[in-house]
Image (tube, rainbow, N blue to C red; front, top):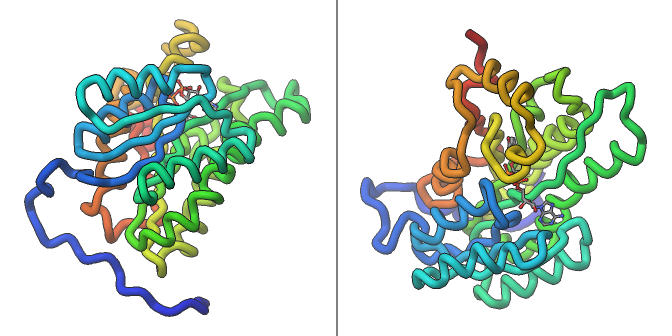
Length: 273
Ligand SMILES: NC(=O)c1ccc[n+]([C@@H]2O[C@H](COP(=O)([O-])OP(=O)(O)OC[C@H]3O[C@@H](n4cnc5c(N)ncnc54)[C@H](O)[C@@H]3O)[C@@H](O)[C@H]2O)c1
């Protein structure tokens, strides 16, 4: 039950054409995990669609570097080194970014750490670590961003979950990872419910196996082969496969879409062949 005054919903989409300046023209975007992979791809696609983007990453200097490449093309992108596992640092980044942009229209929680082990070998420390670097960091960025998003009145939060939040896959040793990503999906729905009246939409994207600096480094040939065998479309996803849905969710094209989890996963959660 709501206790706040009812706000008019954002206008329905009535135009068949993209706004001048791109599908995200003028959108003020905070995007996490922009050192590489999906975050770097989304940063480029968002900026080319007219968004103003502030990125961040825990890897020293890496968000600055990827943003610098786009800024050199004249796009409005900056990046900062931030460890979102530290709630104080996360809040500082959010507030300083909101001040720089004059508000926040889109928060894209893409960043996550990782940790895997078969459950009979999983320590309490590893369990807590994974929940901290995959689920807590979404809270750390979203909580300080929330008042800025509510103030905007037509805002979008995009959370990156995973196929692992939707299905068990024994060989991946992913009990903690799937609990964290399942938490991201559940958090998405509840935030959508709380934000709807004030014009904040919240959706999740659940990728399948995607090529990234992390998967390139840690996933060997055998595991890669196993992963591909599960996907109906037998190739790894790319950051751009994910970013194209994220543009839709960030844009006003999706003003009637909230509380959903979208699988972009080569069909891995649909079936097998
Ligand atoms: N690659 C896949 O197969 C896959 C599958 C499903 C879901 N995902 C999810 O997609 C998202 C993007 O991952 P990716 O595929 O680009 O891989 P990635 O690991 O290369 O990218 C994640 C980025 O987040 C950054 N990061 C991690 N912890 C951080 C912290 N505490 N503070 C700031 N930045 C931090 C990393 O440095 C990295 O640049 C993640 O949420 C990941 O869990 C990935």
